[in-house]
Amino acid sequence: PKLTTKLLTKPPFRFIHDIISATIKSTDFPNGYFTPDEMDSSNFKDSKTVKISFLNKFIHLVNVANGFALDVNSTKIVAGLEPLHTNILLVKFGRTAQ
Image 1 (tube, rainbow, N blue to C red):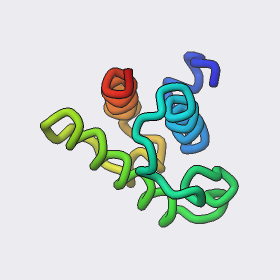
Image 2 (cartoon, rainbow, N blue to C red; image 1 turned 90 degrees about the horizontal axis):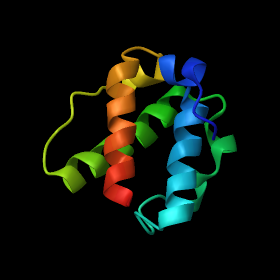
Image 3 (cartoon, rainbow, N blue to C red; image 1 turned 180 degrees about the vertical axis):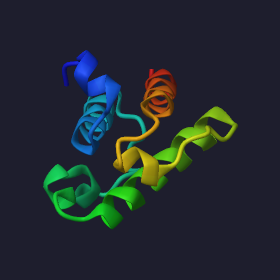
């Protein structure tokens, strides 16, 4: 997805999911970590709980891969709060996937 100031200022869940999907598609990391249902963005349209669950799994992956816990909260990410922490999480994921 195109990284625009608007999207990075308050990253919506779909944007985050698209970044994760595109990274996995181009790097094959983490191969098999997410289920096919989790990779289908249409499964997240109406459920805040499902989005939070997916983000918790994603945050766990990034924390384990980096060897330390990032200060991020999936509930706040879904609410569009703390975009700086969300962007740091995405950067750490991108660097890990390289």
